[in-house]
Amino acid sequence: MGSYMMVTILDVVISGLLLGGIYAVTAVGLSLQYGVARVLNIAHGEFIMLGAFITYSLYTRFGINPLICFAICGPLVFAVGFILYRTLFTRLRMSSPTPGAFEGNSMLACFGLLFIIQNVAILIWGADIKGYTYLAFPVDLWGARFAANRLVTLGFALAICLVFYLFLANTRLGKAIRAAAQDPDTAGLMGVRINQVLALCFGFGALMAGLGGALISISYKIQPTMGLEYTMIALIVIVLGGLGSIPGSFVGGLVLGLVGSIVTHIEPGLSLVAYYVIFMLLLLIKPTGILGK
Amino acid sequence: MKKTTSKRMFTFGLVLLILVLAACAPLYAPVYTVILLTSILMYMTIAVSWALFSGPTGYISLASAAFFGAGIYTSAILGKALPLPLVIVVGALASFCLALLVGALTLRLKGIYFVMFTFGLVELLLHFILWWEVTICGTTGRVVPPAGNATVFYAMLIILVILVLTVFIIRRSRYGLALFSIGENEEAAAHAGVHVTVLKIIIFAVSALFMGAAGAAMATRWTYIDPRIAFNPLISFMPVLMAIFGGIRPLYGPIIGAAIFTYLEEFLITRFPYYYMLIFGIIMVVAILYMPDGLVGLIQRLWKGISGRKHADT
Image 1 (tube, rainbow over the protein chains, first blue to last red):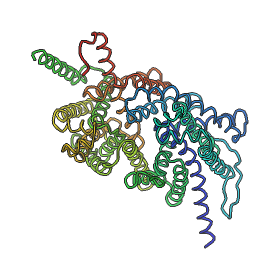
Image 2 (image 1 turned 180 degrees about the vertical axis):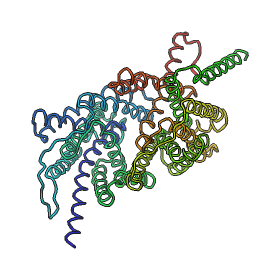
Image 3 (image 1 turned 45 degrees about the vertical axis):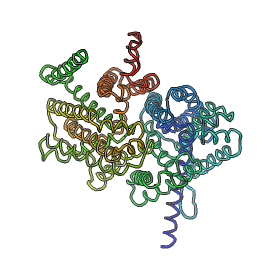
Image 4 (image 1 turned 180 degrees about the horizontal axis):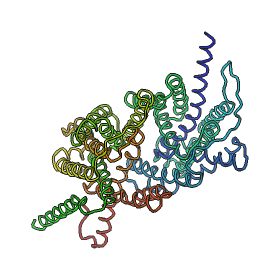
């Protein structure tokens, strides 16, 4: 009985971390876009979807290993994000009278982008649910069994977050990004090429979304309309971790994954409801998030 | 003085003429037109009630779908037991109470937090009711007793007229001014003696009241509903886009925006069924980039350009 209990707990915890790893990657991306580039990107989930479908096409059409696809779809999605910020959002930022107005306008522009990207994807790939099998053999972990692809996904998710954190902490560009996060105007006065840095941040946010999508496509079924749900989850995670805090988003992702896994174990239909309840309680009680000041 | 009176009479007459023409539509227009007009009236109601609260205060609410959906569900539950007018009143009151509760909870939230909370509310209701129907009831969706096309049309028209009168009266009263002062600077408004909290909750609830009424009336046209139809997030986004497209500040901005958008939607769906959401998205992005004050602002700007800037900026 005791060992059965242990296996169940292990099962729930590891499933939670697997889910949480994906949430963490996508949320770090959104956190970068909102926390630094000040765009509340409602179309974030569409970049996730793009990453997932590019990987799907490369694997099923050309037989390219999904893990190598990262190197192709990452830069591709990054370029889309970077160009969008340099054209659309920079223009909006210049024409908006206040930072508050820019937040509102850019969010609405993102709604437009959501429709555009989603429908272009439907035209290219069709509206059906798609999926492929890759590394689907089971692995035994202390008595609980998991598909190998999900463990690889978790490993990659943690690695992506770690690499990105080291990049922010140790490079010159990372320093510029952190400066822009604190105060874009002052950072500009200190010689940071602010438009360039903000566009890079938006691009990196899209890159994380794309990589997250590629990871999702390995373990889950994908569909052109899947974006909004992932956007909402990423939003919940960045509020959970404190708006604009990158380590917070990472921890928040893992926490939300664990919550989702526990609730799914007790009552399968209620995991999304639980996310929203947590989200709303958190907004009411501690809007600054678990790691926020 | 005389000029403004005649101008006012002209506007009044024009509105009355449009109203009479619209009211007689079921008598002379084909069924298709009546159904399209009903959709337009529905979106007008949602957009105007959204702009009633969010326009002056600057709080972007994405909870419209929650209030609209509450009305739809009231209609689905009570539709068989009560006559339509009563169902609409109950649906309106249900949304009103929901909005009072949400308003009281979200008082302290500002800016983006408010946006996210209101959107979370829609998703919470959607997934909770979905879970409830699947697990507790064992069935998803409900059948709503249908009402005739003309009946729904008149119900929507009456709701819209009452709404426009209400908004007109609120904007003319000191409460309207107080609302705008909240949007300009909430702290200063509070110091000037405006009961910021109470006013925000009440106006938020009034705007929800009309969305609930619209939902209760429209449900009878769809005959079958389920949580994904009733709490469709698009209903939250559309009024925002329509109001911004038309222009948030003037009362007729959201009305014009809703009319154009609904017609555009219908036109695009019938002509380009596969591209219509794509074209929709492009129009949205272009509208936000080039028309920051909406269509009304754009026309005013163009008019100023044509008339040689005779008038100073107001």
